[in-house]
Image (tube, helix red, strand yellow):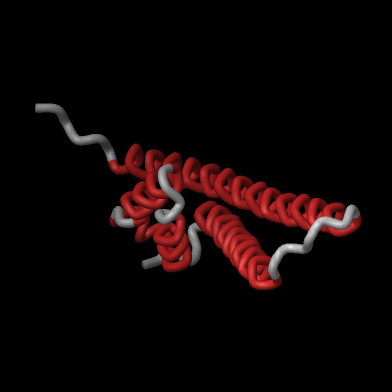
Length: 139
């Protein structure tokens, strides 16, 4: 039988895992910001094309279609922005060992971003569930 590792190695392992989780949340926040830029770029491109089509005498699209498109793009932009802000806050809180509940909430939301977010969220729950990490967060 092998001897269990000393407690200090578990603490350094937890420290390493929390640091990695923090880095990955920063990466996910950046990806969300790029998604926001992509949504805004698509809106600008589409409305530019529509404006050019109207200037050349082509028929304008139906107002209902534009409304649906605007609502979908607006919702995508808001969700991307909120997700990025939550992930940025979570990355900071993981480094500071604060707001374990916020980190768990963000992990649950991040799980919806299949496949990278799902993996990150599950590993976040695993790491935050350890007794030594709970103690580090003051829970």
